[in-house]
Image 1 (cartoon, helix red, strand yellow):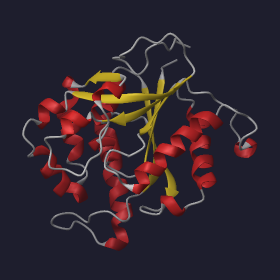
Image 2: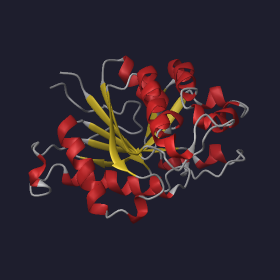
Image 3: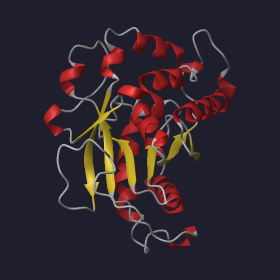
Image 4: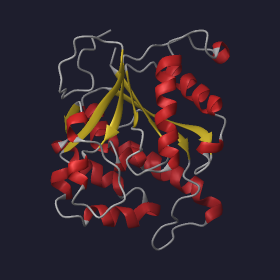
Length: 252
């Protein structure tokens, strides 16, 4: 049986602009990569120039995500059904229950989400950080949400996608990093840089961000590595730093 990783994100494009290289690397190696996206990005940009209107933005961004997912190699995409920009006011139990249902259905060995500041500081990203932490804990406990239909499942690791603060110091961008010393996993994505950039261009509504990223000096060098903090684990004796999110996980 293949190993499985589930990414829990907030919006279409988070999977690409953030851990897209990691996704492509593991998908290419035969890992089943699933994606849970809380919203369809209804409150985001319309494109520059616009490619749709506000009424249809969610539909368009969902299609953009499916195109990017195909390029990155994502096995399955799941929309959790919430509204962009509204996650902070959604009852947290609803979000966590939906995430737990997905974890139990897909049975990932590893979860990947955002860190506490969500890299960009977006309120939805911060909420999804907390949702992933709760889902990691509760999906393994059959007393939580027993009516979901799938049995309890205990992921073995939860990582948070982060960027070293020292790298961001030279960027003119409103991003929040963590001290490099806090990072625990360093994933070599050298061979996936161009794949990730091709996936960028699927998100045509976000073309302004794509241009800003790709015009940044040295971006292709920066994109050769993606970094993480191990926030939860049920394993012991892991070697740090890690160069593999699946390190320590045995074949089924």
